[in-house]
Length: 119
View 1 (cartoon, rainbow, N blue to C red):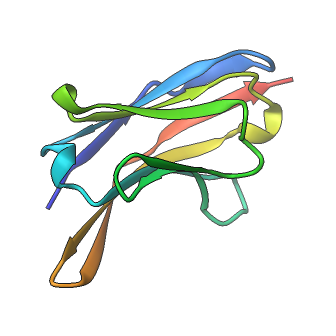
View 2 (view 1 turned 90 degrees about the vertical axis):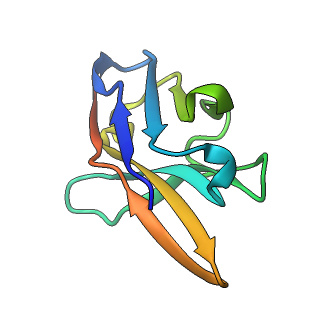
């Protein structure tokens, strides 16, 4: 199992920046995949950025060139640097970790952190 704690959300004006953090309760070397998702009111949860297969990064088209996912292995923490924020980025942002055991994957979610971008 793994527990995830997100932080760093808040209110920011359009064009501004925020950095989200996701601290894991175990070494992120032992986690098969980690990433960020978001859910806006009335919408489905969607992928924002993920690490897959080690250091490979995957981004949603809507955030490419503006958001960067990174990690600090020593701190067991994954970050999401968000620049040039837009009102449509407003959502609750969730961190997800996937553990694969005996070919079965289990997803773990953090509690979420609110990001609000004002126009």
